[in-house]
Length: 573
Image 1 (cartoon, one colour):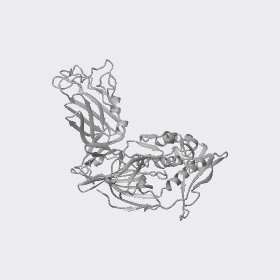
Image 2 (spheres, one colour):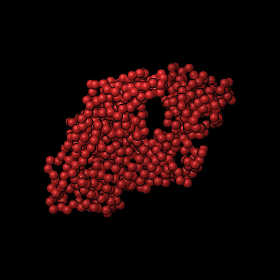
Image 3 (cartoon, rainbow, N blue to C red):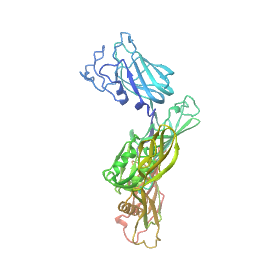
Image 4 (spheres, helix red, strand yellow):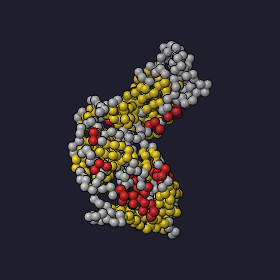
């Protein structure tokens, strides 16, 4: 059995500073473009005529006649003492306030001997100044500064006869906590194969905060730079191999004496943070186009399987969180969104293909029970028709000068206003501008709607069972698709065997199907889909999983008289 440990890599950086930055300088080579600093992309350590610099062992390529991809390369060479006739200056402007624990500079070639950073607020007042003597090409210049709006980086000294070459700046630092730091950690990964709910994966861990950097009572602590969209990457380490467990984002920091606690969510959790306003009434538009609208502007990477992307959608998406809007698309497509062990969101239709085996040697216990028998599944949805008669949607109301936004509780079209300028008119809202305070009436057409319920049933009840129905609601169906999805959900609920297993985790993920060996030898096993996995990341990598599936008989005892064992708890570990 392999040895395991756990570590967390935390991207403790200002999440918006890089894209908000506007670098400028008067001290760059003609071939260098300082705005490329926004890309944070390394360029080669070229061989140049700097004194005693060009190694002739083939490791340093020659500088091309027309170099490309170089952000910063000082126009002036340092003198025999490493000083410059005029110190090179790099200025970085921002449009918004930013906070970071410091700056991580990425140099190419030999690093400078000394440089100074000056921080200013948005009004031009200097709020911090500090000099640094780097000792690494990827140098972290620590200095916690809050709410800065401009940086001035002055290079004061280099090694003799050297240029200063810089390929990137990070507005913060990467922090790693390993097995000597982390005291407790758990990972909860879940999926709903019926697509009725959109689950969120969650990571929670506690680590020793030796210097009180993450103690919220420390006014100078690194916790001041914590931001919700900073990346947290957990890794399981098995016999020295690092296994990526997914990408997570801080939701709630906390501290208790010498322990700091972090709670984080996956990409799906981030979709709760913003509303999707761009919904409208759809009439057969492919799901891929609607998903592109939902994810637009979030910065969240995602992939969609071809069959999901091609699914036509019918209905209306109201103003709601992006997570709720995504749930509506997934439910109408019979699809799920997965983030476990990934650095993006993968959207696909689940299958019952066995992808992993959980043998007796990895199990501690198994408990099973029969779920309530479901004989009927119904889906309620609404069909919309565009109105033909103009109506007063909002009667004369007083609005202030400037931009005004009005949201609607039902879909509308052909919007106009009694006075002012329409800036944007959509199915769910209107934005208009007034030069002065005025009374405005909003006109438009309302969509008619008809509620419809589609039902699938088993036809004949199982012997001894009573009829039991489950109902669902969706907003992006027509009759045909509702019939398909209701039958799919009904088929899934016929898998009425629920399992709870405690086992030594390997690489199982929610949404996968697994073959699970019975603890009692010769008694067959189970085929089941993993709906939820909770893993103790510091306690031996032991997981508790909930599954739904069915019992599999083996040929040795497949006969009418076989007894079915349902509650085993013996394990062999």
